Length: 424
Image (cartoon, rainbow, N blue to C red; front, side):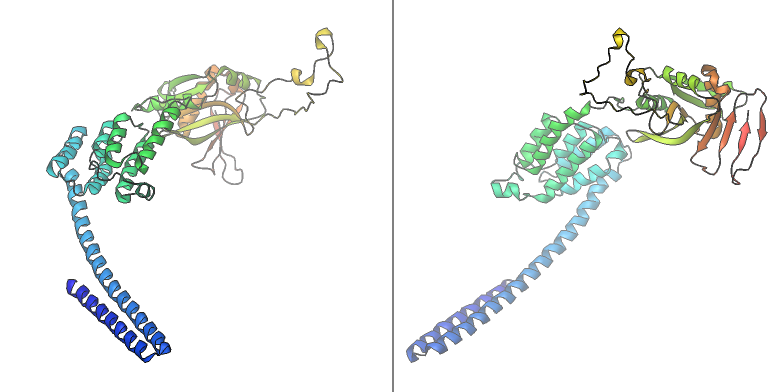
């Protein structure tokens, strides 16, 4: 490469000497037109020659750099993954020891970006996805003072962008896991990237917003979530219950003789919902919809709802600013219509009236039937109301349960060829 560069410089110097020589000859002959044309040709030739030589040098140098980076990158990634794959015992202490070993083994911190990406990749395997101390230890892998921008241009044009992207990836994982940073993590970022970096701006936004939004959810869940499925079902029903007087009860299907699935049932019902069942007309059926999903962080729970058709209340439009006819109902005048109407409860929605919710251990039809049988004890009106079970897993079947008879009989009736009716 040096020989090639020296040859191009000698050629360019020779061309420049030729230009000056022709220039002196043209001046002596006083032929200005010839001088102008000769200088233009030589200048064009010189520019094209230098451009081709520069492109050759640039391409050869870039190819060498790319080849070296590819070779080094593959080795670095494999060795960094090897730090976490060769360990048999995978826990928090081992994870921190691996990071300490890397810091002591390589004081120059070669391949620290690959090391951080590998550590983030195997955090779930070691069981430390929500530990703040582990994230601070990962951020501490970055060298100190090397990536701090020294002027405004470096700060605005993403100075050391590959390293800042790696640090932003770590902060994004913290934000997704719901981990709020502390002051010690901010000091680590300042010593590594400075206050003018994009990493510190991301840290400042997290430090401002995450404490504000941490307790904004009225249905706060315990951290960590319990492992018992029954407790998760209880938390899910409590989260969905709008009425604070909702009572959550646990039943066991083993106490029923007719039940097939001997599983647990978690039921949620409020006094207002029992009152709505008592006021429900006997000739109108109610139905059970499901299964639906409710999420507790990353865990989903299936539930069923006991619903009735929605009630439509008349809409009364009154002009509140009209004072031409003021009723004095305290002195015997008739009360306005807005005061005589019964207020709508929170369980009466636009699409349906919610009469109860439940979660079962098997989420099967028989477990839902067992739930309806348990509700008969606290809601005697269900003995005279037909209950339809609509299961989404098999939308072609429709099961009707009539509980007003003591004798259990079964009938099959064809409705469009795919409906089944049972009486109990």
